[in-house]
Image (cartoon, rainbow, N blue to C red; front, side, top):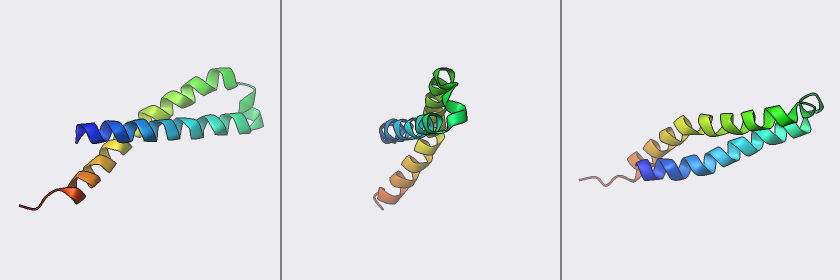
Length: 68
């Protein structure tokens, strides 16, 4: 399950980080502070994706487990 969680985390982390960066770039009041906010937003996106990836991996693992 750990391998699955890592794969999901990579995809979800990139997606969340990108979405947060897009928000910073498109909101005019945040754009002025973009140089300091973009790295923070990217880090927050990757960190928030960790528990979400674990939950998703557990659900996938339980749904695809063989019934013995």
